Image (cartoon, rainbow, N blue to C red; front, side):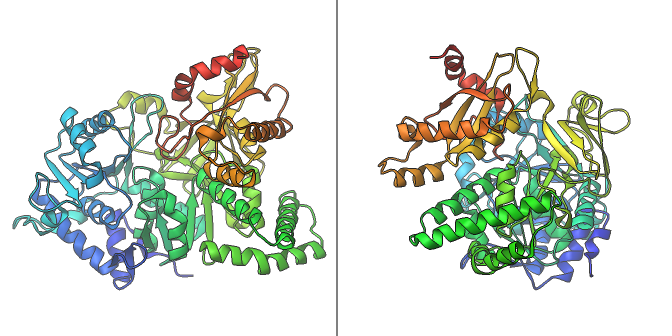
Length: 598
């Protein structure tokens, strides 16, 4: 099997040049419908021009270049151009406040800031509050304003001394490729410094386990500020030559999937949870009662087979043949309608995943490989192989990565993908990296006999109740979300308390379906949270969850909040992890009322 030559490169610049030359006529960047089409040859030519323009603005090796863009082709063009100058591009979450923007600009020290028109006001306010920005490049604005356009940068003359090829050949493996700023839920964001060598080691490890298809298709929809998008779409394309379909709105991701038919698709748990809820709602809406019952029965049968296989128990020929018929007549058409008929690798990561959800997707022919990692590890550190699916684990370490468990249960990692440290924070780097080079991840986990890792929870997030009992809130919260499709988000609270309580937020899609089924006119969370039928269903879901939990773990009281928790809001990070500290502060009144019995 032919494998990518770019894996032998010493820098991502060299990897890009190899792949662009090999695939000159293939579309590299696109938008859906009749939108943008940019071939690898055109991509490489524009990178050369934009690099010259950035050089004319004073960008030199070791400098930083900031971005605040949605997922669009221009991101890849400008980011790659900056990389070829030996500079360090980085992205800021588009939901950031002016104060957060100012902090990041000050820490990064970038003179060039590339911003989309929709974010200009906040970007300008952030620049006013701090930072060293000298040149603002704005997309989607007319020529002649106070900001440069990309067109003006692209045609700028870099000067006779500029040699593009010499610039990118002088880039070294240990040069910093990008900064990934942590979400900052436990203090100011830290700038994770990842090198060219880190990213190439990551790609080689993934290749050894997953062998992504050369020249495949992916959707870029997660924030560029997150290592998952940078690693698995932007940098991965430079190695495997994927065609990237840019999706600027995460809510439209499955319209983009249906359009581009990806060969690889990954998402955070919330993306998969919403897809599962939509599929189940579609089944419930099937007008033919006989067909609806048949589909449900087929899924139940297939889930049973998945569980037998996961337990290494025998599956009868009759049962397997029934599942094969269901796959041909029900599940394969379902996958095709979604746009997954070409997809060879499905992935989930960045937050805890529900076992029931993983079983559901495996049953319908979408076996999702769970991964575990973090920005400090260049994204993926462990990966469940497709031919060794073990649901509920995050797989063994990828080649080049070593994992061990400390005496207190903390997961420690060493290897070629470990970051070069935090920017401007030697004391934080020393806290995270010990003298032997092991990264202390802050996650609690255990390794099974086959070397597969299971993550239990974050070390600092374990609930220790008033009696001294240690519990995993993530496990409790997963059970709650499995208890009822109405439960979209849940946070378990009980640290130093006599018992556990929960704050619950309704799932918007499931709420809409529930409202239609029960004749409720207003499906908004503000109205639904107080509806008796909703309270009864959530209470039943909590009871179902409690039946799978030990007595001390069970939720004794709960509150359905009359609001939504959007990504990157007060309660969730952009990748939809819970911001536990901010949540407990914001809802202190509701929490205290639960404990007082009010």
